[in-house]
Length: 410
Image (cartoon, rainbow, N blue to C red):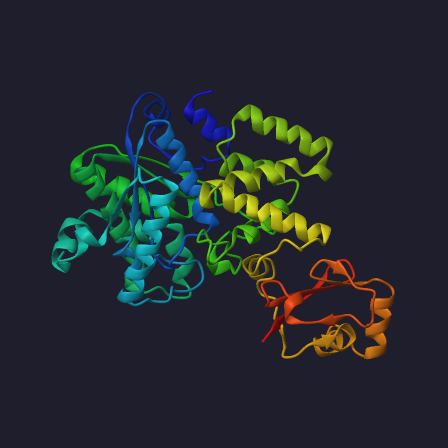
């Protein structure tokens, strides 16, 4: 299987520009680029699908350029429904630093990172009109799908002209970095072809591109922050445990597609996992492999193993080995209640809102439905004190099999 054939097999090719693109990828060593605007201080899982593709090309010997849009980020590309919120230059620069660090880590320092603000700063408006605007007609721009969808509701000139900026990025990289190919998500096709046409008209040269289908969740939504379901690549924003929980629970029918898109597992390995997933879906071996490959690539093996430990401990109910950090990660988003003094287990259950009355609390304790830091409590006289807390701070109460409550000793 050639490189291009493998890309197609993995479902990574949607639109293609350049008849001999397969030959370029299979038989030459070329420079290509992928770009993103720094609209947040971290990339998310939707971006990661593109980064993995870029990394896959790099492993095949091609040279990757990762473009952070310091210039385009000041404008924002057109969205299907409304204009993007303008962010300050200070915030944009903070975001740039965060994204550059992430990209460098994922590519182990082997990717060239550029900022399009470097060639746009000082570029006079009249020069932009002469150097770019003269080569692209308004009719051409109006024919772009994203522009058509916004005409009825209205589109600003800034958004309308965004494609000219991104088109010039490709031209600049072609001339200055010998970058002949762009690789992006399919929502960027209109901007990509603008760059290809600009290169053809100004230089008389051919440029190449292919887009990847946007990765969707089981509800058909994009993995993006605008969809409200962002899974950030920054471990401080989305922990390895949270990422593990998402990946281990993806829809059975989609897990093999995700293995193809997000991992470097071989065709044979993925086909074997596909077989196991169909024959014994309850074992979730494909899901576990997906989580292992993604988390290890992003955060390292230690973070992956820690995520597995937390998950398995919660599943079994044995959290006696948890640290404060484990608790904060595992129960992120769960509002804790305060403990200011030593309390009997019955009083604690009522004070913490775990039980509605002392009578109900005694019933839960009596029938063995309460665990305290992984230990089943059946003694009504059991006293919760600071020395019984994890790191002298946290008390984790489980009622029944899955209902957890967190107390913090003050």
